[in-house]
Image 1 (tube, one colour):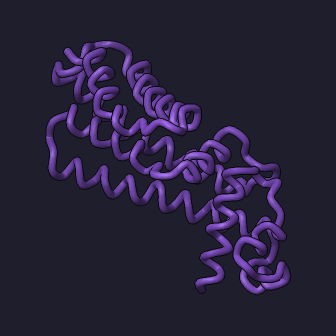
Image 2: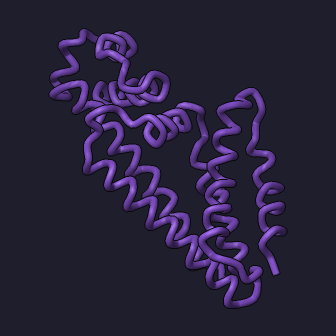
Length: 193
């Protein structure tokens, strides 16, 4: 089991770095085994990659969804819920490897990428989008947020998250996490009533 985990970790990192262009030889070398030994754990490179991608999708959405459920149970203020979701999504990316991996999936999906995984990511992403949109609508109804098209606010919300994540790739020497709270405050000032 330990070798399988190490193989998946190596493929995770290499996929983020190179996309599907990494080789099983590279994975085997990193893990310290012969390439043929990989086949004791995975049928093919595609099988390995699909398992890695599926595990990461499940980990990402499960972890953040649990946090969101917790925020909603503990907090009734729209701003606090939206801010906590915002920070949770950003905080998930605690390494550049995770960030590269997700940007690779979203911007440069590999050929033959399992359609079921694409649908799963789209479904879960749309679900999260809907949760945020629901709280923005509630904020407008409660006159906490300026009355404006909710679709525009929702897009602005997610664009801010993704912009910060891209900035982390561009300015990798700088720790942008110290700016998350202030960026949130700037965003919130732009939409609050």
